[in-house]
Length: 122
Image (tube, rainbow, N blue to C red):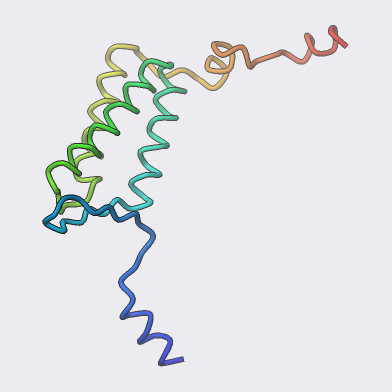
């Protein structure tokens, strides 16, 4: 058991994606948590405000990753992406007003079918 713990301490691999860039051997690490937050932010903005804000969030997230890779940033990605996503949420909240409810989202995407309509069609 002690041998397993010492081996586990020596392994410095976590759940992350490591990308190598350039000839300098610079490595940029994007954690799975970063990718998860980015993906969820895109889905939340799409549900809350519509298709355009969702696509805008996708574009800004990809741009933030691209900037981090091009600058060979050695800081965590969420240091840049987190405040950017919060700022983007506040901008969309200002422009679009309050968030849509789940019912409004389903109605807007023609995914809402009342139970009465299903009975009448059958």
